[in-house]
Length: 510
Image (cartoon, rainbow, N blue to C red; front, side):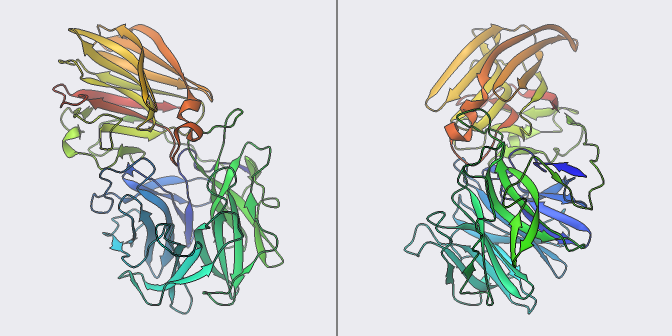
């Protein structure tokens, strides 16, 4: 039976996996978005469902003034003696930390800060003799030799139990290897790492030793995973993690991208992929000689695809659906699910989508190149500069929004484009309706923005207001490590808005 890659589509990079009995758990990076570190569950490695987030409280995830693509980098999840451990880096405050939970659905602990451990991409190995090792990168801002470092650690306190030691320089695929994982397999210690950067030169390499601190012998068959220089719909493969199944087979999860066009561009982010791992001469290798496909032979556990839940989000609960995120730590007064029963209320603040702050924004990842997103908005701004609408957002310097605004006692729908230091209102249309459906239809190359004006909840007028290139929101243009979100927002553009924006539903269809 075949399965399709990616197994988790959209901006879900840097996957890490662990197995507990018959269950698999997986986490990914979230950068400046809150809550942080989604955690997924699967029984077969192919069907995944999100069961929560590891970082749901401000004290776990301080993101004040976080630049785009700062925040949470590369978590690793491990399970030992009844406890789940997630170790990661918050680049915004330049600290590594561990959170723990007895139940992966939470609650997760407050951070155990690792004051003596610099660098990024930390990982843990619980050895069978009781020792615990932390492995990570050099501190790029110091005089440390570039490469990978390791120490023994007490994961309950975060204190190092040995000196921090340099253990490996990589194969030369980049100035400094990253995303290391140490495994003990058949009595040997395997050190797997990403090299070549997380762009088109990305690759995965591996070394081994009889001792956890080395010296490490490099794999003569490296890289064990890469698509660099290939003509393929999949690129930038790397940042992998391994898992062994009960039947003795091995599998790897890793990030990759699906770029569009030429020159290649990708805008929905680095995604989570899966591939079988074969052992050759005592070394693992992904897929077919390090190559993977959009369709591959599935694990024996896989019996077919489960029906996906509906993506028509109603705001009838007192909690947001876990697929929604905020930009940085949200301000409590900016949003409510109770001010107007059955509606999401956004109270626009002075903060805009351009600012290094938390606007009144709630969004969901774009997970498909072809999709349609709509939201039902009830908003009659009382003052100029008050606005609310729907945004396709890559970062604070690259985004498009279709919004309801007020100008000279009239209501308008606008299409605005922000591209680097250029912001332009491309179109403005008079709108008499207080209630509208705002929508965007996406294909791999274009966003098409449209409006449905309502009267007593019936559509009385529908029109397209404009188009915009997806490629201008791509990482190759906008930079960074994230992917496009499509979200609801409100703002007073420098002043607190006096008019709440009410959203009745948000619908995502692919």
